[in-house]
Length: 332
Image (tube, rainbow, N blue to C red; front, side, top):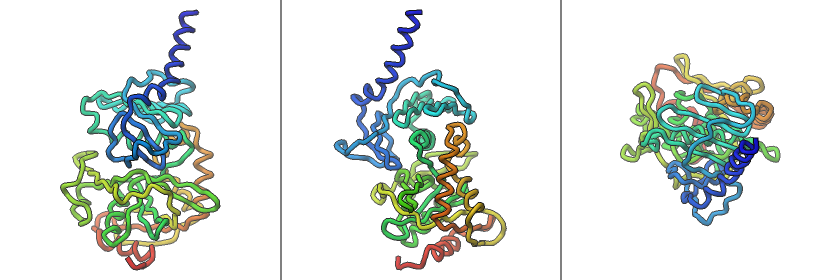
């Protein structure tokens, strides 16, 4: 019994020292969603920070062996994910295991020696878990600046065209804000968004329909049933400060014609709730009240528009022009 107790206390002592031990060996400093990261691993998609930058409540990322068990009552959030309120374990077979705890610690356990080719799992899984553990909610949105310090966000499920729309609007003169995800929050009666990190992601088919991004700068980040998705960095244009959300445009892909209509109240609530990133984690992480209260406040403050584009007919140029008119025909 004494031996067991000593082993138990020692194990928890070591767990408590993880961030302290890691500080001595980490060399990369980054920012994502306004949160500083200190990492043993190079995470080139994130926004780099000078080594002497202030590091209030950072996240420590290190290579190591993930725990085999989580403390507390474990919920299986999906096939890959086990979690408690403060811990999450994500296992991508044959590639890597990821452990995220207390909103400030990430352990990456490689399985594939080429695990760095699959860091898209870090960007999607670890960052999302960190946010939830810090009581912040990530949304599945892209966005552009409509004026200094103000943005429009495009909410849609994957494959609907929100990233392509954001790129096409940049061709029309708008500056990029975020791609794929952002944190949205309410403060002092206004709604704000924090961009994720400076990488635009496009499917191969969409790249051929734009002139902004250069072919030789693309980075392969994901493959799905033979379709390739590529990343494009935009570090020089990336804004690290929060921006006020002027409006949210909800995108759908159905029918045969482009349709535009305002959206509010219960319909807007459902549309925004459907675009919470990893929304199936919300009950598993016991964030239901946070989720409900935040979305309720956002849809009360921010006007919404639903735009439907044809499922089969290409609208690469027509669609952005219609959206530009909705955003306001400002001198661009």
